[in-house]
Image (cartoon, rainbow, N blue to C red; front, side, top):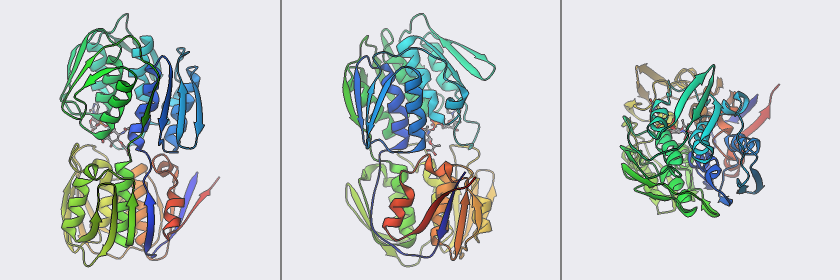
Length: 418
Ligand code: EPU
């Protein structure tokens, strides 16, 4: 088990450069399965989710070479194989091999995906999409078996604008015969990044970033390159942290328009920042005002910022109301923040937060990735020492978090505990 130790109370100054977006990279790597030649993906974050996906590509007879943040992937000789539970359950995004392998080989055997325990996280929209494209689906024990003689384009309306379902259906449809239309598609930047990658390979996809994506199937995908977009969740996490204890803290390699929903909340609560298109400098704040926050699909306030944001709300004057609308169970951090001195009450999907309260160091547990990020922030603003157990979750999504924070003045260490 990994453990993070933090000595709180230090001001943070200097520069944090944002890495490539986890939730795009974890789709771009499986997307490479569709390509008949070689691919290059740059700005890939070195996080543990990436390593699991690379292992799956190799299991399927793909060749991967890594040079810093660049991945060279050759999937020209892909062979089918069952993706075992030991790999599929390591992360949520293993489900992208369903769409990609179905598109390439018309047959997939994969054990159930894993990922953070933050709600039911059904994949019924993905499966319904594959069926509409002509695939049959069997569930055998904890394994999905998907098969199609031929994939044929179809109109696929989504009941909810799911990021995962939009990308997975796009992957399966890229080599289907004819036209696929995804209605009520998710509009997140992750989807644009994946569509651009596929188009660079010769796919014919239009409308990514809008609620209607049109995919005209092609037979062959050629050599291509893509750069992973900057991670808006990582950027948001450091912006929230910097809003609390940053003094001339600069966050670079960002796309400002991906962060607008967060920036408007930070400004409303009193944070002073200098905002440019690709970097933000946080000057600091006087007293923070209570605000209300509700998570929404893009371009709204991203659910993944919610847990870190709740720490900021605990430092605002008055009662803030935070409402989570995407997942049913994204409150795993609250008991630990209360243990550290926060005053938070959960009612269904809403947290009522009274502030400001002084936080003090405690031993806590990262119940999931973004819960872990919120505890890092809490530990850094708290008085005294915080120990975060199960910190492995945090390393799934934040590249070099200890190094990046140490460079700006944080006292933070990562340990292996047996
Ligand atoms: N949903 C269904 N059926 C489906 C698909 C989704 O009911 O077939 C529900 C989910 O249960 C959830 C909601 O729809 O309540 C949203 O799910 P969505 O499919 O949009 O999310 P996801 O693809 O499972 C990705 C990210 C999440 C991020 C969300 C929203 C990956 C691997 N995961 O999840 O990232 O929160 O989009 O932006 O890309 C994280 O990074 O911490 C994380 C959880």
